[in-house]
Image (cartoon, rainbow, N blue to C red):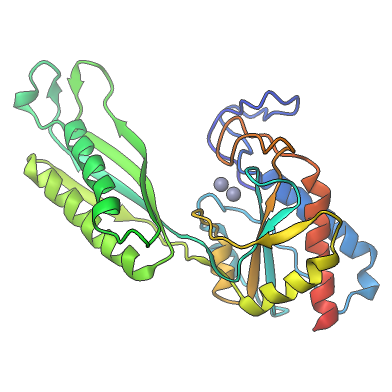
Length: 314
Ligand SMILES: [Zn+2]
Ligand SMILES: [Zn+2]
């Protein structure tokens, strides 16, 4: 249900009215999916062969929501035997469904880098220690880690997405702050990267006389689709709808807190296409993204169908 901190630029008549907040990851669509599925299942509740729990998703962007829900007991009373999640993807055509068996979405480590320099006059940088200069060297060194220290066949993303420093054009600030994300499918590559990142941050800062600190937030695990459950759904969805493509079978370098559920119960995460027929309009996290609303019906029906059919066959 979470939005992103940006100004919507889609030009749609129903654009976000909240300044600096926009549903540019499609989570409003996910909420509508589940409400639609709830209505369908409720209408035929007496015929259902079991209990369905509908779990809305608060805090996906921070990748912490599912962890909180599990701690609060969402998987108990009654115990959950299987789980299904869904995310929209406007770079895929409508009806396209991607849900490979095994590791599907990457793990995510969010990091923050704090650099303590020594502020002063912009015209006399030699009297201080410029944390912006240190930050620039750290960013470049981190980027070379990905290319020079990880084997080419191991997919890894190490991205600095936020840079904060300074208040005026003639003041050397005291501190600089960077933040970013690491995405991998490989635990040992991830561990090695994190060790090297710390060495680069602390070592580069020291080289310039500053102090650098690297802080990692709690990790979100990979989303791993249970092969048996994924096989069940590929059979079950074969007759789901005319023109519906279900053979997507590739990993995606994004993360989802649904990964926490996949560690606890057999689960399948679907990524569903909702680009326009011309090939989609933008991508998730873009202020210009436009989702093809045909997906509302398909997504809701898909969730209801999965719950219905799984209960019937188990
Ligand atoms: Zn997102
Ligand atoms: Zn999202």
